[in-house]
Every structure is written in structure tokens, then in C-alpha cells.
Length: 210
Image (cartoon, rainbow, N blue to C red; front, side):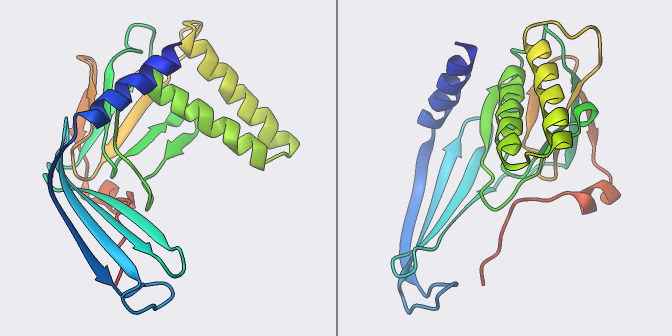
């Protein structure tokens, strides 16, 4: 039931997107080389919590190539956010930009931005559910005994956190955003600027097609 509520809230945020500008043009396909066989679509949207974002899509009618990018146009200082997860903050809002890396270090869980990375607005519980689903998908790919053992242990821990049976163990939600647009809306969230060294190690998820 809570999972359905999180999905509904995220859908409501998507429905509040305001389209400011949209342009379409024919280009040569960067993959198959087809002359003017690809369509490039760029949209500038005003999205709650993120401000203006550029969505760029390339689709080739010849080979089927498709690529999508989301770029935050309004950037802030690079930021690291940390929140110790407990039963009182599962409903705290989480705003994750397409450039952000999300992790729970104590569980060895990390999601880095890639070419298809998307922004979302959820809460701490919703982020845990996303990790839970990702671990389940990984278990279908890695069937060796050690992977299955570690994966199921992580699933049990996430289940205990969500059901308030954490046994006082500390687990931390960490978001690192080189463009500073992500947020964890909780009074106990620790915030600090990312160092130049930390920035060098972070991915942004932005792909340049020449």
C-alpha cells in the first residue's frame, strides 16, 4: 500500500511539469550514420523542486537508436547530504536530481547516474523501496551462493528498517550531487559542500553525442 502511495506521489509531481519550449529537428544518426534519419527533440520544462530542466531525446527511424538526457539548467554548489535512517523520518521528502549519486554505505548500496538517469521526488521510504527492487533484480542475474546470501541479507535489513525493527543499527542515506539540486527535507539532514577531490570521483550521468 505504501509503495503505491509513493508511486502516486511521484506521478503527481510529473503531472505538475510545465513545458516552456520544445524544438524538433532532423539530424544524421550518430550510430548508423543515416543521413537525416534521426529526430532530435529538445524540451525545456519547469519541474517542481528542480526549476528549469532540458530534456534531450534522439530517435533514429532507421536503426532504432534512442537516447535520452535530462540536464538541470539551474545549478547550485556541489553538495553532500546525509541522513541517519529511522522510523521517524521514513516519510521525509527526498528530491533526487538526474546527476545525483545515492547510497547507503553501511549496506554497500550505491546508485550512480548513467545515460538514462532520471530525476524523482519521493521520500526516504521510497528510496529504500527502490534499493530493495534493485537488489531483487540483481539476485536474478547473480545466482552464485555468496551473491544470493549477501543479497538476501540486505533485503532482510531493508525489510526490518521499513517495519521499524532496526535494532538500533545505524544506516545512512547519502546523496552526492555535483550540481546541488538534490534535497533531503529533514531537519536532521547533515549538509556540506563537496571537495574538489570528491567531485572528481563523481559521475554526472550526462552523455555528449558528437
